[in-house]
Amino acid sequence: MLEDSTAGSTATLASWVAGLSFDALGPAVQTRIPLHLMDFAGVAAAGKQSAESSDHARAAAFGATAGAVTGDSACTVVGEVDGLAPDLAAFLNGTYAHSLDFDDTTIASSLHPGAPVIAAALPLAETLGTAGSHLITAIAAGYEVACRVGEALGESPYQRGFHPTAVAGVFGAVSAGAVLLELDAEQVLNALGTAGSMAAGSLQCLEDGTWNKRIHPGLAARNALFSLDLARCGFRAATAALEGRKGTLQAFSDSPNVAVLTQDLGRTWRLLDTGVKPYPACRLTHGAIDAALVLRPRLDEQQRDQADITVSLSPIAVDIVGRDVASKRRPVSVVDGQFSAYFQIAAALLYGNLGWAVYDHLGSEEINHAIDRIDIIPSPDVEPAGAFLTIGHEQMKVTTPSGEPGISLDNAMAENKFRAITSTVWSRSRQDEIIAAIDALHHTSADELIPLLRG
Image 1 (spheres, rainbow, N blue to C red):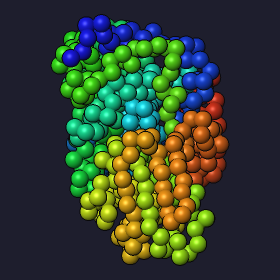
Image 2: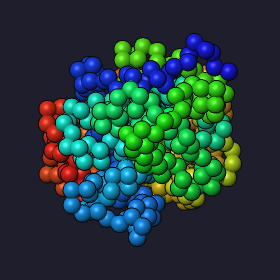
Image 3: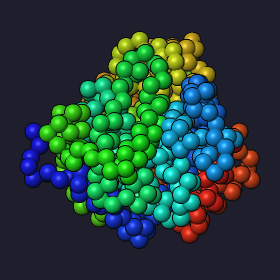
């Protein structure tokens, strides 16, 4: 059970969110948030265009009961010409951003902060005509709260069958919206309290390769907006939604680390540990992909086609992407492939880094032959998203996958990814406009950027 000394963590977060300013972010956060905003825009646009689930999600959002919205109340959906009501725009943006599993991640908290947080922030910022610096502040608040809640939860949500992005993401989305709406601490606390009743997200979809996971950030963003509406109207909600005896941490975690919710809050920024994905697959496969890409040019044709392949992964990675079951060894759907270290290693060795086109090779004889030579074993000595790969006499150890802060994450990497994945969505000149608007966001209005994200 949680210690009495941790009581009030949700209230502490609420007060911090209510009082956060752009100046309090500091230069490192002020410059990092625009990078993640660019990544969000890119993966959402690409997800809208390429994910096989997107037409169905779009039909629901733009359907008869919802309908496209015209005039001042129409909020931007990335890659779409028409707008939607704020809650449905939040839903579709969050869904598009996560549909390729290409959106940013934090390894420490095992979640994707950008998809739920930015999806909730954009329609509010657009409706309010928010200053760009205020939008950056809101997104920073949302990232920080989501990351801290995710880290407090630990690995237990996965083990219990829940998606940390969905569980923690709704609290981050509420926090971002609260900054934009300038709620006071009591209102933020009530909004977080209501969010505690909306934290969810089953991962049963990974057992059969279906699409539930893709809508989790969209649902978190949409639910966050309703939580904020309730709070603004005076609705009273649980005051210890996170740390309470029946709160979110107790519900989803075997051993919650409550202290991390508020430890050095405002001084140490957990969001700065967020990485940008170089491959559209579960982050826990990326160390193995990196290792395979390093070894690929060292192998002759015979080694590539015949050598035994052994990879050590962390126990959590083996559970999620490396089990010796049919859905991992013979992936059929894109979701299967995204969560199969066997498929990702085989494809990297055979084809290099193909991006989304890698899934064109699902079920190929060449892929299946390579998969049959792969043995995956759990090792507590391997970092969560790392890998130790052996192919014949060649070996490669990856501790931290590419795209992490301090490894290969910088503005050039993020911009190159953005341009590559949106090249068939937006013209080069539109890409230039979006990048310039993001670069200038700290001293312009959000209205200078958000409409550019339409189709």
